Image 1 (spheres, each protein chain N blue to C red):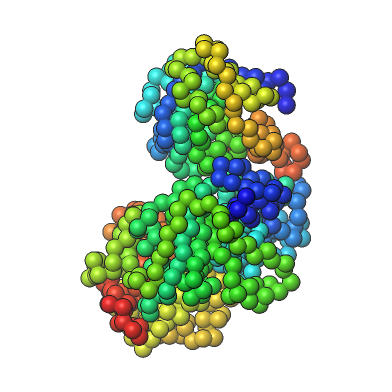
Image 2 (image 1 turned 30 degrees about the horizontal axis):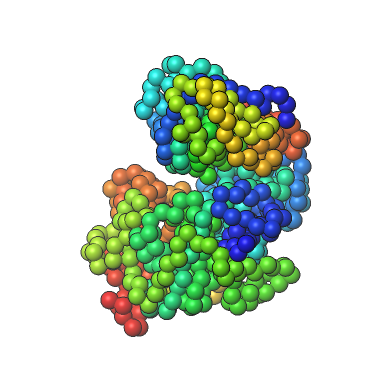
Length: 174
Length: 422
Ligand code: SF4
């Protein structure tokens, strides 16, 4: 793990039960990954994509990412979201975050500790998240190193490639 | 700390003392099952190193015998992969052929107390064998076969205790339709089956019920081990060391629900959704059907074919109605042939197809056309699942499907069974 594990960005706040259809709407399901990344929250917060900066942060409530197994995490990653902290992540969504290399963690108390527009900083080395406006620091729930390695390494396939376990692939989806 | 069955199996496979809801379990995979779809070019990547060929099972199932060039290509990729790494458990087109979950069940590949993964959602079928089995994604399968590991988030467990016994003409499918209709989805939860009535369910009935766990959106669906299971494993896979796993007496369940099997009646799920959608057969009796289908990983067992043969014996499928029956594996097909079921069903006007996913996924051998109505004993009744999106798909038990095929309308199967349940 390198120093790149300290990240920060402007907070975009979302509530409980944010579903995968909001992040990757049905009509985009069979389009390219690039097109999908331009549809994130297009139905509920169309300003998100217009105004967000690379590295910005999503803060969510409970059961973030409920819904189908569609690769919504890949869209957040490709849209440039720096990381996501939620009270609780949906299990299937977490699987996609790991598999597609998108940083998403659980952080109890996060939805009350941050307001829209705050700046959130995350240190994966010491598993903390800080609100730079209030100075409050919260504990981020660590994930096993095996999963962290995949998440930070860009997902499962690049990691297996790097280990020499599967062949490199030019036209890799994603 | 006392644990549920799932928690215990995951703890053991993860080398941890305990496992509780919310934990992430990183576990050793005992069995990794690859079906033909895994080898489609969009998802498959050439494997350079395999963790352990003896832990891999390959079964071609969705598209057998290959109906398209694309399917044939996927099969060729799978064969090459098996040859390269010396994978012995290759279930190719032929006598070994079958739906992966049914092959796993027939051969005793699902080892009690261990972890099994497959890139198909109905992998929970192996829960009938006290095995923690879950469908995962294509990338997860590549991970499992190269690294030997998988990971799961541990969910809370809902425990079902069965009491009593099913009445004649009522089957495991009806138990499922009751649970799905009454309790709905079990998202992020494990389902555990046990209780004094569990022993009255055959291994085949348990297979149906465990398979349908995918439709409850459960994480793991798992049965307690008992003598029936232990005898079965000794019979079909005698050299394997099993780890039958019971729940600890004081383990914590999210909820514990008792079902008196003797009170259940045949049910039907209305079209488009499996959960929260069940009604007694009587409510839809008389609904015209164009096709009845009995098959899939859930209802292609020998018991299912026996029930269909029992109902249609000496009778004729209604004019204008199609009865398609697909055994889960060619082993089951052969057993049904020897038992006379294939002859009985064929003579009644039904079609017994080779073992494949076939009509279940609208792939081949029984797809349904625009505005048609199908009554299916398979896994899913979603819009468009079995063919044209305008078709309507009801779901019922094999008995209800067979009885309805004879009349051409949805029909209560009670009169075909001693001790009429009507
Ligand atoms: S039989 Fe149907 S549900 Fe089962 S694996 Fe095949 S397509 Fe899936």
